[in-house]
View 1: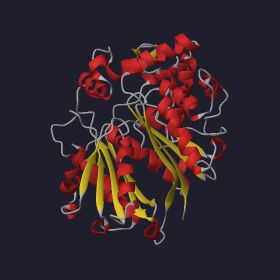
View 2: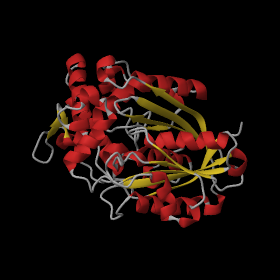
View 3: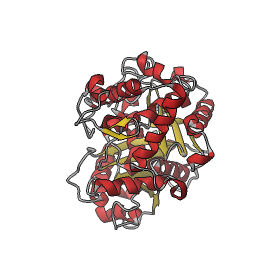
View 4: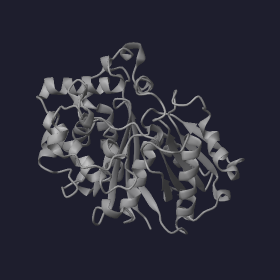
Length: 389
């Protein structure tokens, strides 16, 4: 079976964008990706679009919007994917399956979201749809309130780790200073992130504003090709492993602090790759909230349950640490336009492997792990990428 490989990418700046809609955002990123991969629109056999939407725009049928932004794709098969905050990774897996089944040679994975035009209160309610509304619709604070409950539960079980969450936020904001695509390129420092203030109020439970990712607009695109085609291109990034594992949606039916689905995805991916965490050069992980990154340290195996705070305190995940996590700034600094996030994380990984990450670059990056999740670790995707060419 042929394997799908990354041969190029495009990425808009994340933040409050002048682009009026996802159609415009996608057109920008697609044009960049075609130029980067040095291919034409006629070379593309399939388009896989990841857009959460769910009320951000009355315009849906988002897969068809790619051709509205570039009429050369008018007759190219296009499909839209949605899997909460892992929507981008779902689209990526769909494109990889398409290529590896032999149905096409080259595919576009297009992730996008336009969020900032929606009032803040509505954003919270839209995102809460990534939870189990039958039981969780009345959570105060929307989706942030859900993770506020998770943080509070963690503190009750393992002790108050507010300062360590602030250290995670500060790390990611410092890293984001080097990312030209990042929504917020500002180094706040631990003291600011750890202090409740007018500029850093509590949002939900123990979570402060600096513990929460940003509401952003943006798009990112990956160009995939089969291995034979990729061998003729300028660059090729392969997947040593790709894995998806789910968990039950309702928080009442599981111990959410286990992040069990995330742990399963990491364990299976590393087994598939024949690697351990020590083999990875860096990780891009889904820090929608700082408590999520701490729980992900434990899920990936950097610490035992309740000991994730030691990882950040010991500097393990800093840019100069044993396993840098989120040298891009992560969702915390880069922003979190839902459908674009999973695609963007893979773009950041590919840039590292091709030594094209500029000031974000980790020296001699050979293997990169990517973790993207939907909901509160309900759907969990792990990729392990390596440079092939």
